[in-house]
Length: 79
Image 1: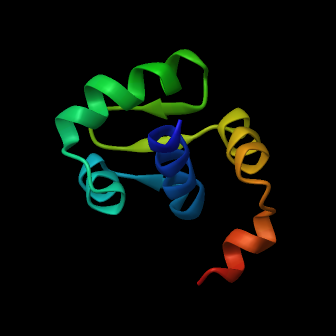
Image 2: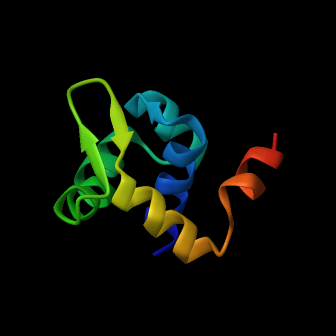
């Protein structure tokens, strides 16, 4: 869904991010991200997390590109 895509696209852009950065970028409270968004992404193997850092996996990168129909170059050129 859109929240998952926003989360993955943000991680794709940064490579890794703290919960605070993700919360700010996708405009959701950290607790909502932890309880609603991350469980599915973790279960699917799209992300890895520890207490302070979230990392996108190769599977997550591929999923982010597939769902957005954007290439790595498209995302890099956004900046």
